Structure formats: structure tokens, C-alpha cells
Amino acid sequence: MNKNYGIAIWGDNNFIIKNSTVNINYKSEPSLLEITQNVREKGYKGPLLLRFPHLIKKQISTLYNEFNRAKKEFEYKGKFQAVFPLKVNQFPNFVNSLMEVSKEFNYGLEAGSKAELLIAITHTPIGAPITVNGFKDKEMISLCFIASQMGHNITLTIEGLGEIETIIEVNKEFNQGKEKIITPKIGVRIRLHSSGIGVWAKSGGYSSKFGLSSTELLEAYDLIKKHNLLQQFWMVHFHIGSQMSEIAPLKKALREAGNIYADLKNRGAFALNTVNIGGGLAVEYSQQKENKEVNYSLKEFANDVVFVMKEISKNKNIEEPDIFTESGRFIASSHSVLIAPVLELFSQDYHEKSLRLKEQNPPLITELNDLWISLNRSNAREYLHDALDHMESLLTLFDLGYIDLEDRSNTEILVNLIIKKSILLLNNEATKELKKLQNKIQERYLVNFSVFQSLPDFWGLQQHFPMMPIDKLDIKATNPATIWDITCDSDGEIPFDSNAPLYLHDVDVTKDEYFLAFFLTGAYQEVLGMKHNLFTHPTEVTIQFDEKNLYYIENLTESKNIMDVLDEINYDKNHIDTKLKNLIEESTIINKQEKRELQNRLNFYLSENSYLKTIQSNES
Ligand SMILES: *Cc1c(COP(=O)(O)O)cnc(C)c1O
Image (tube, rainbow, N blue to C red):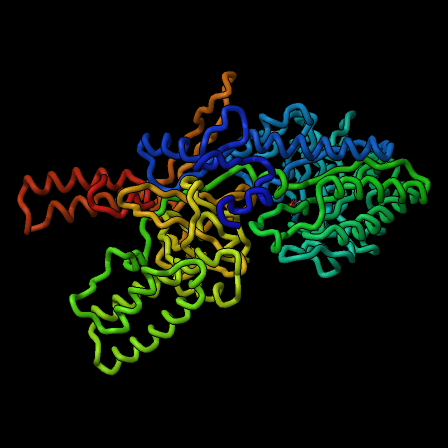
């Protein structure tokens, strides 16, 4: 990995390294660093979430273009349609951009709860599809009827037989005695025996939470027919799980679903014309080619879907169905980048400047110092072994009381410096021994963000997210790095992993700002983010580009201030405010003037958000 942090593997040409910085590969190509500094100059010092609508647009148009290309290639007659599943990202600054950039595609939204349904009804253009999945009660089904009467193109995906009964009941309430009957369209979620692959594969398979079995499907068909709703029944739907790392399970599921579709059609479901293949299209998160997560391209994915549907249609003698997708991760993940400032490095004490060499040192220390000074490429391995050997002896001497704490500290520093330099010199020989040693010399970077809030899938599922510094990329980074977040929880850590090593720069953050960027955080992370330790969603901005190709900042939304955080978990803000005032007022150890000053200071702090600004005392 090193200098370019695997950007060619996960970056999808969205970013480029220019001189020392990572830049947006679009229009005037601003660097992440200049955007970050621009926002920080306005006074926002914590972690920062940058959103890039042009990357949402890129994903949506790539999806449509690839499917339309495949259709052409295979002379496929069905249409292609898509919706965005809101559970992947419901934040308004994302959804508004999504709808803005997708206007030309008749792109819609998928909802899985009442609140998401309200977003879908108010943000999808009339005519673009809305699909409603998940468990529904009568109220939720009624909301869908209301949407259909507004003119929305809305589909209820039936997850269980009970839902059909409710639809029939609600239909009576809305339409009985009316001349013109307006109802939502109906889809059916089928339970496949094919399941996906990986940690998110539970959405498919016989034991899946969702969908109708073959027996239930036949009953559902009869019910729909009996109540004259066949006219509305236009879609079968399946979803075999997110982040499908391999293509094989999809092909299997497609064959299964395609045959179910064809049989229902031949049975008499005359309005049926669409197969909804759900989501699951995977994203490459890896920074090393040995660790790649995805074994197919979007091109292959689209080809397979179109080809399998074409084949089944031919065999079963039916019209080629429209293809409908609900890909979320693929659309949203690349659009946001989290930038987090490094606050401190722990183990800077292993710096040359911390050495306390004496006039007269123990002979082994003098020798260590000589090794360090004369270390070069040809002797590195030998000297490294000598140094490790000396360290053992010196630590024993310390235990026996022959050398003092200063000698011991010199030992640690010198050996650390020797290991670091040897690894650098022996760069091309990544032996097991060297890999192991990296664990010994790793640096801990304290970073101003919360893993729980901003990378919950790393915390819960060890999902890797690409990370790299946004500056100094002209200098080779040599510190094996462990990332510590600012929560008081030992799980708030991204440990150094010798199979997927991260190297960062040796920096003095009291003199020089240093920022890390975490990429592909746009799918699932935001709403799954936990307020552990009461750290909330970071300050966010949307980055747009004007006609002159220059970038500008929109939708600046600051992280919640401390009082609002408490309010959100139902503390009484006024009560806390009054209590603080009283505590100052009633203090018997300060005078009136001091009380007034204290109150002013406190008011200022209460209006701030809860992330750290810096941990040095000389800055405000
Ligand atoms: C979660 C979900 C999706 C989105 O899956 P991705 O892997 O993010 O594309 C699509 N459809 C349904 C029914 C889902 O539950």
C-alpha cells in the first residue's frame, strides 16, 4: 500500500493524489485539505463530514447506463427502473442531493417504516416509483393509499399473507362506492432458498425474516385474484442481503426468482411485468489487492441479470420483464468522506530528542548507539538482531538493579529507532519477522472522532473503511499506526493490523495539523451511528461546484451543542441551566465579579458542540 493507500483499489477514480495532497478528481480538483481548512477557519474544529453530490450522480448514472448498455447488448425488451432504499441513508442533506441529481432518471425511493414513508412521499417526484417493504400495520397501509390518491406511483410489497387481508380492508374504507378506484400497486416478496454471502446475508434463504414461501405465494395469488386486485399486482421482489461479495449467489437467486415470476405470470397474473432484484451490489472497501472484497464488476452484474431473465423468458415463453433494483450501498457509500484531526501521538517519547545519554553509559548502551548511527541497508538485518539481543540483556540488567531508569529509557528509545529505520531500509523484504516487529513500534494516533458514531460497522462487524492522511503524501509514512478515538471506551480503536497495515507520518501536531480521512462512509454509517459517550453526528457540509468549476460550501450543519445533546436524551434543559446558574450564584468561595465572569465563560461553553477542539491549552 504505502504512499497511495490503495486509492486505485477503492477510489474508483473519485480522488487523485496531487503532489502532497489527496484531491477531488472533478472540476477544479480541490484538495480535501483546502476544503477542511476552509471550514475550520469558520470555527468548526471537530470531525467533519464532507458530502459530494457529484459522486451520488456518478453512481446513479453508472447504474442506469450499465443496465441500459446490457439491455442493448442482449436485445432485451424489458425496461430498467430503480429506487434508493432509505434505510441506507435518510439524512436530509443526502436525500435532497440524491433527488436533485437523479431528476433525469425517474429515480424513486424505497421505504421500510412510517417515518421513511413520509420522506418518500414528500421527496419522490410524482410518477417516479416508491416501494414500501417491511412489516406494515393498517395505518402504514392507509398511508400508502393516501399517497396513491395524491397521484404517487407507489407499490406495497407484501411480506406476509396478513398484509393482503389488511389491504383488502383498507381498500374498502378508501374506495367503497366510488366510481374511480385508486389503490397502491402490489408487489410480493418471495422467500428464496438461495441466500447471499458474507455478514449481511441473512436477508435471503429459507430462514429469512422476510418473504412468502411457495405455498404462501399460491395462497396470496388466490386471495389477490378473489378480491379483484390482479390488475394491481405487477412485481415480484427478492433481496438476498447486502454487500454480496461474489456473483454466484445472485445468479442462483435470479434463476429461482425468474422461474417463480414466470409461473405466476402463466398462472394468470396478467399485470405482472417486473422483477425487483433488491440491493446487494457490493462496494470495494479494501486498501490491499490481497484483501479485495468484491469478485465482479457492475458490468458483469448487469449482464448476468439481463441474460438470466432473457433466458428464462424464452424458456417459459413469456415477455421479458422489466428489471427493478433497490441498490443502496452502491449509490450512497462513496458520496461522503469523514475528516478527523489527529490530536496527539502516543509514543513520541521514542524520539531521538528524548535520549538522555550520559558521559559514561553502560557498554551495551554505547553499542546500541553505535548500531543506530552506523545502520545502513547492507547491515540492517544483522544490526537489528544485535539490537534486539542487547535489549533483552539490558532489560535483565535493569531487573537485577545494575542499570537505572535513564539507561532503560535510552534502551527503549534506541531499539525503537533501530527497528523503525531497519523496516524502512528493508522495505522490499516484508518478512514475517519484520511484520511482527511493526507491532512493537506502532504509534497510537488519538483522533478527534468517535468510532461508535462515525464507523459503527467497524465497531460491530469489523468492516474495514479506507483511511489515509490528506496531506504529506509526498513523504513516505513509516509509522505502523493504531487509531484511538476520543470515547472513553477501549472498543473505540482501530488497531494496527499486520495483514492490512496502515502507516502514518511522524508528525508533531503541536506545530503541524494532521488530518485523517475515512472514505466510503456514506452508506448505513450515519443513522446506525451511536451516541456513545454522547458524541453526536459530526459537523457536515455539502460540496458543490459552480459554472467556473470552483467549489463552494452548502448546507453547513453543526454537530449538536452540549445542551441539545442532553435535551435529546430527555434531560430538562431549563433545569440543567438553572441548576448551573444556582451553583455559581450560591458558591461561597468566589466573589460577585468572579461569579459574573464564570457565568459568561460557562454560557460560551454550553453553546459549543461536544467534540474536542484541540487538546493543547494554548489554542481556543
Ligand atoms: C437493505 C435493503 C436494500 C439495500 O441493500 P444494499 O445492499 O444497500 O444495496 C434493498 N432492498 C431491501 C429490501 C433491503 O432491505
